[in-house]
Amino acid sequence: MVSQTWYLALAAFVFSCGLYAALTRRNAIAVLIGIELMLNAVNINLVTFWRYGSMAPMEQLSGQVFSLFVIAIAGAEAAVGLALIISVYRTRHTVNLDELDMLKG
Amino acid sequence: MSLPEMSALFPTLQEVIFVLFALLIAVTSLIAAMAPNLFHNALGLVATLFGIAGIYFMLEAEFVGVSQILVYIGAIATLITFAIMLTRGMMFGRTSAMNRQGLAGAIISGLFFVVLLGIVFQVPWPNVVADITDGEALIANLGALFVSTYLLPFELLALLLLVALTGALLLARDR
Amino acid sequence: MAIDYLPLLILVITAMIFAAIAIITPTIFGPKRDNTQKKQPYESGMIPFHDARRRFSVKYFLVAMLFLLFDIEVIFLYPWAVVLRDLRWLAMAPMVFFLAVLIVGLLYEWKKGALDWGE
Image 1 (cartoon, rainbow over the protein chains, first blue to last red):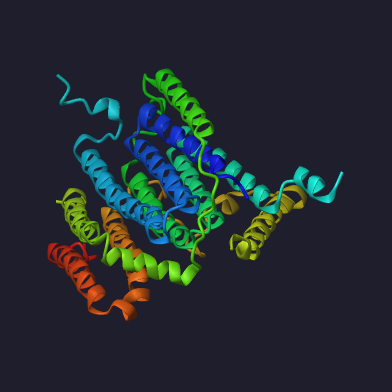
Image 2: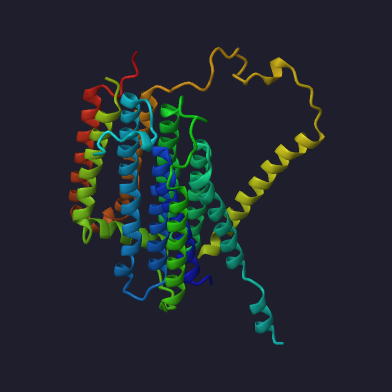
């Protein structure tokens, strides 16, 4: 049996990769990919805590319920985020976040 | 040396499979985060999602694993690929893929990983394995939770999906 | 048990190894005689008439988005369908509301013409 520490360490690695992409990438879609990686890392944690825990089965199942909600909300987030990116591309002809600085004071 | 001690030296099959999946996820998530070509990022993301679905299967959360494949790989990855194909053109090969915070971002996320790893290995996690119900009863329990304890989030999710659908439609449509 | 899925894993690994062999072996042993016709992209026998690297129509994206929304619905419909026989109206009413809200979205989309593929 693999202990839960290793699953959590794996999730930490995936989260850090996503954080790196979200912080440093220039392309808006790459930033969105980073965010998806972070959401997935959180999901690994939720499912791991569902598997390794000592609550009553129904309460324990909250881990899976939350992970399903996260998947659903990630879908909505991806749809809106990508629609925003396409809309911005149509008006500004770029998706580079550095060049989208009209609101900068 | 007795037989149990001998067998403790060799990794079990489950450990071997975990290491394989972990390596797959590590490599492909690095590709998804760092490859300069946007298409390679998207393909890396798909492979990472597959690996994570495998991790769910190892954790015996089969339904979450199937949902992951169905929604993430089936729909979200497709959507991202379409968005890449819609917005590319002039942006290839002109500027570097990283912004000016490249070094700072690497340091921050590296430090974050080290701190997180320290916490994960320091905390004395309760070393118990939940006694889980088998597949079908577990899915029935999930359904019961959706319509009882998590009724409000469930209905709010419908509203969220409606708003997301209409909003994204308005934003992306040709005018 | 997770070990029940071992055949599935073996299948996936076998498929990957088979695909790798099928790609690597011809690149090592196969003859390489290039000409311009061979280098053209394969279009099921048609002569390619356009560069593949052009912008796609946004309609593909809209269809994928619709698919995503109703794909998400499935992961909630499935556990609900399993539990419906036990809970009956207690489970029916929430799902009716859930689906009604999403159908409003579908009707809106229909009304806005996102489902038409016309020019």
